[in-house]
Image (cartoon, rainbow, N blue to C red; front, side, top):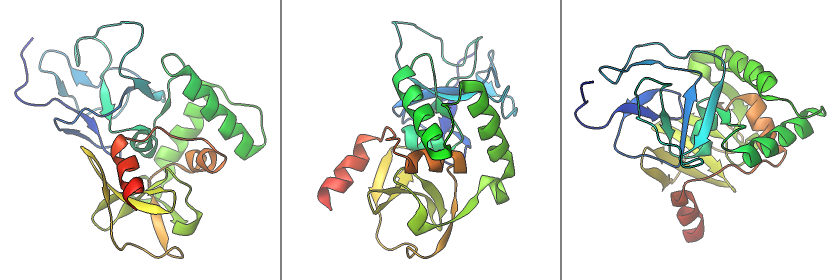
Length: 216
């Protein structure tokens, strides 16, 4: 197997695009299988293998993997807020507590029984394909819950407890200015996830977001 020079191309941004960057982030995940060539450790151009787009813990039961080897393609996210924006959901195996809480919030928002992984994957995949212009979903800024991400003029922006935070691969950054609460913004986070966030699901944030909130 030939080794790649520099960071592997497996870091995911809120648009769902995959880039090479040294920042690792808090979560790993995949898109249902292998979308890379294990010999060159480079992406093949395939966007996904199945509808099962998940975000996982970095460590689980002392398991060890060769990243971008013969198995599925390991993808990395700054945090769960970014994973949600990119269209992923919590894994029911390595993040069972988070997955159950997410399912419960989804059910609370829709007035149904908690959905299983298959139902979530079906709905999320449909919304990944339905948004206008690269999965953007027009929403009023004032209606977006904490943990939502939208496409700003200079890149992805998250809403956190009334503050706007600018995304980068290495962390969240304070943002001055931005759209007014009554403006319509292109949300990247899928509508079913927005509903679960509004119903009380608390996503995992990168520590940089807490530092910004503490200063303001």
